[in-house]
Length: 168
Image (cartoon, rainbow, N blue to C red; front, top):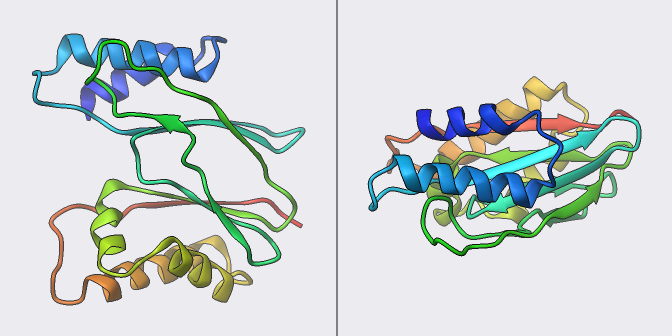
């Protein structure tokens, strides 16, 4: 994690397209990590004036964009994991956050809960049910949903959510 964070921080302020930055981050990890290690990453930039989100999903659990009308989509455009393949390439995805839309980014620890029943549809439903709450309330509802999905099979990994809501 420290190597990934350092690689991202070193390149973040460069103006290169996101797929190029991800490729350079992956190269850095391939040079610094043992060959049996890799990382996943969801790297995104949000333009505040247009609410356009440009992103690359490098093998990470796909964030869920819950639209104001209750529909949802997974942000899975990108490519493979980081630090693995020498000639890997990544693509850039784009989404525009409309007023009332809510983006939920998940840590890899949530994937355990997702395989236990916390599907993208369940994430969208949880967000929909708590949509009127402050973001802290949405976070609490998502954490409860992850805990409920795992039941007694608690994971040692974290269950981290990042929630971004565009105000109506």
